[in-house]
Length: 379
Image (cartoon, rainbow, N blue to C red):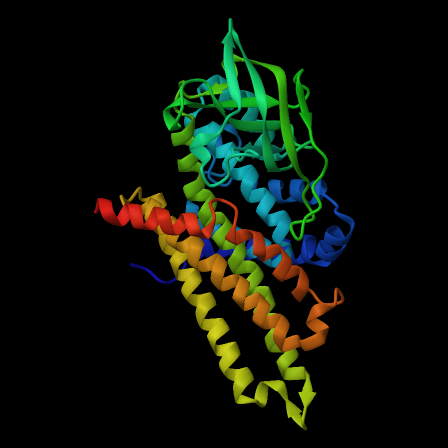
């Protein structure tokens, strides 16, 4: 068991850190305020291999590990949480095509996705099915060499802008075995989008409903066999949980760094905030929670790379712990800043807003506990 990164991993980490500092951090507040979807900046990230991190290299991917991805997303998120998180979703959708698609499908979509010439969205959640994903209602009825889709997906990052939508739809009966995975391309007849949602955080990426009204999609766009969709979705979410946990780390680290700097500069009652034991204890706890979260994310990522039997449970544990800890770290950092932390002149309020959704998406933290308990009963 190694607790240090090797030379190649440190290079990956430094490359992502330098990129985020130069291309994300200086613009994150503006993107947030103006709700700008920074596609040019994301394409610059793709030039470094960050749009197909664990996609195979024969279609333009980087063929890196889940641990590499965790290192990358922590660094990117320290620059801009919302944009880093979108890149993580793009990676998850691309991986599903790479892992479960046939060679023709892989070569059709992935070279453009790994360059981010095309952008991908992942469509599972519906207005009536969130945590109970297996109850989704969007129907795909076979009609010759096409499926006809009817229904809607909710809270979809990239909706209306993305070129490729990796969708979980019902081709069979009730329950998880009736779900299949189908890729719907932008411009398909019968595909439309709802209004852009007004969100608390993650404002540098559009979020809207994806609506299917007699939308005809070729059977050739189905990923895997009929009935494989729920398994594909859940396997994708194992990695997605690590990624969102890693994004939580980066934002929490940025918040902690800001708090340490502020505590060393701000004076009250004749001395620096950092000289008060109450502040010292708070900062110490924040640093400890961040380090513990990072170790859990790295452990889960390594378990997923090694296909360990406990990987699903470890991913759920890491996502639950890291996202909860990160939100508290950012909130405590805001508190250390006092009234200034509440102002948009400082990044703390944005960090808090962006991190809040990490406790909800990729499975709520309540569902993470359900998964953990279920996996424990199987051991």
